[in-house]
Structure formats: structure tokens, C-alpha cells
Image (cartoon, rainbow, N blue to C red):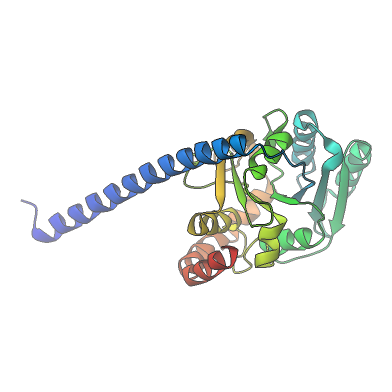
Length: 280
């Protein structure tokens, strides 16, 4: 016979799952209807599509081969490479420094690539350093383990950002293969006004994780974002693909930073509320 305590726990778990399900249904419908609304509004306003300069931020370590794989996919799928700048940051003790430099030399006639070699403690600090040195209208933090799969993704980015007043902060969520992509986005893209309002891309509370999650949380709280399925990237994550496991991945896992960052996330909700209000 189930005692009262067990019954209460079962009931609590059931309520928790129901709330989770309702939240997913809400955000699925919300993001879908918002996209339709903004698209129709833009169409009938007869506004022009604004072409933007795009800055891609890429901290990397000992992944020159993955970097080149990503680079090849970017070049093949991009409509106008001339308006891109790729900012690459690697550590001073990176074993692949010469390989990175060789790859950059090979592709420098096709794409502007700025390489920074210096030591910064966290993933967020690396991205913030690159953002500070960027000049694009749009800021796109990426990973070296992704490939771009949608043709003319940069043109689609112009279209999606043109649906918003560019004088205001805005964020575009892309399709990165997330199971609940209407609830979270890997590799969200923000405009320069977003960066200027906050003064950062990644919150420096964290050791390594939560950069994308923080941006998404601010997006939802401020309601200044758009989810598009027209821009697609595929991530070859070592979390799910054994042949993608490398020293960099193992180092990040063994550091224990994810557990620490999980606790930091729970303790920084107040700051996310404050920062989301800055964007409105």
C-alpha cells in the first residue's frame, strides 16, 4: 500500500510534468504565431530588407580540423562573404596554432578572418573580448563543431532582422537541432544595439556554460526575439557523437565547471531580470 508521503511525491511530480508540458505548448504556439505576425507586418509595411555586416565570434582550442570543416560549410552556404568578419580566438599554448594560421592563410582571399592569440579565463570573457573587437551590425557567437547547412543563411538573417526596428535590441533564434527549439536556441544572434545596451555578449558569472541559455532567457523575458527555421546549422557535438570527442571536450567535462555553472545559474535569476529590463 502506498503511504501518504509517496502519494504526495507522485502528485508533485505529476503537477511538475503538467506545468512543463503547458509551458512547451505555450512557447511552441507563441513563437510560431509571433513569426507569422511579424512576417505579415513586414510584408504589408513594404519596408526594404536591410543588408547587415555580420561578425562571427569563435573561441577555439586544439580544433583546427573542426575549424576548417566549419569554415568550408560557411563559405559554401553564404551568399555574400564580403560582409562577413570571423573573429577567432585561441590560447597562447594551443598546440594547433600553426595549423590555424595555415588554414586562415588558405582562405583569407575569400573571407576576412581576424585571429587573436591570448589567454582569457572563461568562455564568456573570450566571446566578450571578440565582441568588443567586432565591427558588425549583427553579432553571431558560434562553435567550431558546427556546419552551416542552409543556403544563403546570411540573406535570411537580413530578412529576419529587418522585421524589427533595428534601433532597438533584437535577437534571432536559429534552428540548431534543439529538441525544444521554440524554448531554447543554441547560437542565438543579436544586433549591435543589444550588445550596446548590456555591454556584453556572455555573462561572466559562468566558467564555461550557459552563454546561449542566458541570451535566450533575456530574449523571453523581454519578448524581443524571433525564432526562424530558415537558418539551419548542424552541431557535431561530442555529447552525442563519440567520434567527435577530443581533448578540449574532455578538459571541459573533467573540469567540473558544468556543475558549478548549474548552481550559478540558479543564483543569478535576479540579474537576468535586471538585464532583460535594460533591453526593453
